[in-house]
Image 1: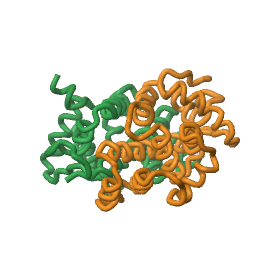
Image 2 (image 1 turned 30 degrees about the vertical axis):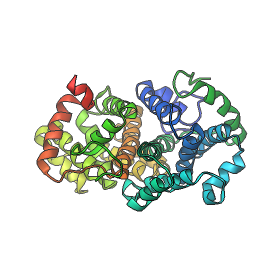
Image 3 (image 1 turned 90 degrees about the vertical axis):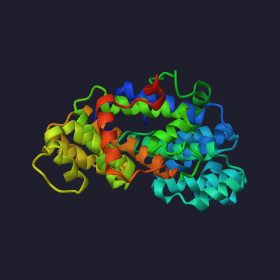
Length: 182
Length: 183
């Protein structure tokens, strides 16, 4: 049971979004620009940053909803996503995303944890200012989404296959113009 | 110097929004609905929650700019703002607002820190669902803003007068982007 009376049957952030559409509109528009719009970081890479931060914040719903999307775009499986969470350095991800994930992890702890050395290294392996900006803002945004979802005590399906299945729809529909109740 | 090439001389989040207006417009629109839109919490109370979370995240730019806005909105009882920033108990803060500030402080640490007891306490003192929802989302949103502003090391003025001016502007105009102000 969530801490406030949310429309029934809606998991994770969908309950609070249905409760307060006025704020949901801007949250979804932000997610759309950050995670789906034209960008030199792929949709898969951006969803991976979102997943990693949600994992660090221990938010079950967000790390699986976005982990599902990341594996869909990256054409891998959830086992690979799980490996990224615990040891991304051992994966075959690009050096650039391997330099951006530690920046996201620093942002998760607090903005001041980002170091000039992390930024310098990310640039060295090819990250642009816009990519650094978007990494920081995606990480910061998920520090918000995760807190919104868990701070209101929402429920989340425990079967991770559900997230993998739903990812196909969400990838098609995007974060705006979708039916919260479907 | 910020970590990325944002416009020089522009402080805090405004420099970041000018660097990336595509995301900035939605951040400002969110702040406007949350802090100025319809809510059972007054604008002053909502700015106080934003200040409380920003102080706990040690984000000087957000803390001082929203504290200044809260002081403008509280008017004669502006002393309340310094009490909250410095964790000094005061009778000026109602038990309900005190319980909501406690929930905001839990959200600042992590969403999972909020307990049923925290919620029950707020309800006991008269909080309704919308009070709780808005408190949680304001606290979560400033967990974003604080990280965005400090994570890119944006310009943080030291002059208290600069924040006082921001406070007047935010209390009068709300959250409109620099571009919209020019139009």
